[in-house]
Amino acid sequence: MAKIVIEKYRKYEQSGMKAFGDVNINNAITICGCRLMDGEKGFWVAYPSNKVDKNGETKYYPHVKFSKQELIKEILDAFIDEHKKQISGVALTEKQEGDIF
Image (cartoon, rainbow, N blue to C red; front, side, top):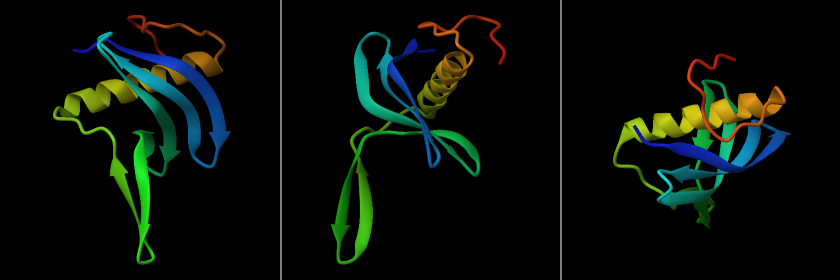
């Protein structure tokens, strides 16, 4: 299990977007410019990408690719935890065991 910390969290409630933040993984790498989104199927994290319009078609090319699907879930859980803490007024930098929103 990786140690995930959401840094520079900024609440931003507009058209499905809930927050911005940088994702720090094991104090080894930081993915800047991630967005917590809320869609029809629930929360998900949008990672940095390039938008390319070609021949009337828009495509997005990711800056980050994951080789382990478990890490994607861990990042999402950490982002949701931080979001819940921020909106409840309890800003913490580390996930606490037994936290229930």
